Amino acid sequence: MNHKVKKLCIASTLCAIAVIGSMFGALLCGVAYWKTNHIPFTLIAEVFGTAILGGLCAYPVAILLMGINGADVAFYTYVVPFLISTVGGAILSAVLIGYLKKVGLLDKFMEI
Image (cartoon, rainbow, N blue to C red; front, side, top):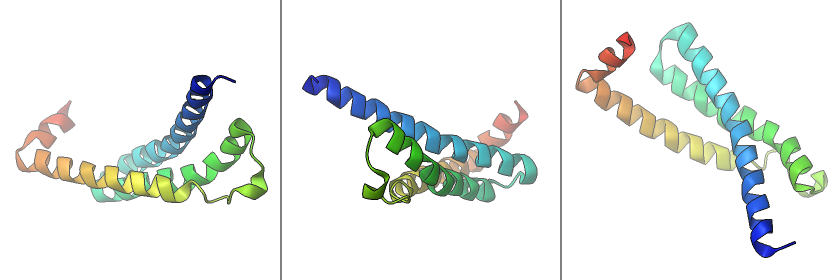
């Protein structure tokens, strides 16, 4: 296999794994806001969904797509990277939402 093709295959596999993780975060984030209308709880739900549920569900997909032995990789391998990424995103979201609330734009967005 060509070196460039191999890199592309690895990158596309990692993207597929990231999409799987983010779907759980988006689902829990939407349900949390729908049920509570509480933004901090929504951010926590997003972190839990992406990092914990998404990280654990990415494991079997990674084994299937990457063709690695399940014994070589711990089932929680993707939890830590997903956690670091999603906590950073949640912090940035909280800052942005706080700023929008401070300048009065959040209420205008909520009306739409």
